Image 1 (spheres, helix red, strand yellow):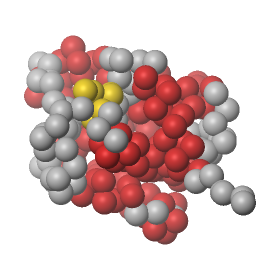
Image 2 (cartoon, one colour):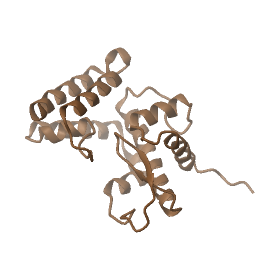
Image 3 (cartoon, helix red, strand yellow):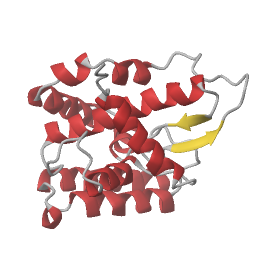
Length: 198
């Protein structure tokens, strides 16, 4: 009997091992870096310079994280807190809200049609929409979204924002293979956030 191994579950197991070794949690960027460093065959083995490659890598990791969260909850082993800035295993609490609350992000990432059907022009539209909102009076919210701080559970201050800014600049600097356009977006977002948090 030949049981095929579900690739998403294999990626979930790899993520679980990484998270078990980091009790304080890991950012999405760090998870992807470690997966690539471990030569995971479950995410694209390409530089994250292209918007579509970046989107697909992000989607696959979040799909596996949501699958892992459900599995750990069903087994009453742990709760998995999922945020781009910090993915962390937390103790299982019986009777907690768990997975009962409707989570549109969960629905999005567990629907593989969103991965299959999203093309490069769709990713570009998402980025354009982001900047349109930013110019339309929602600049603070848009800048926080770019920095992936919009759903932070911790109170935000300028030190936290600057730390995230340095991470993003390091990650997307053209000298490290990033794009000038992305770096300009990050710098613009930092200027906006400094006005609100200075």
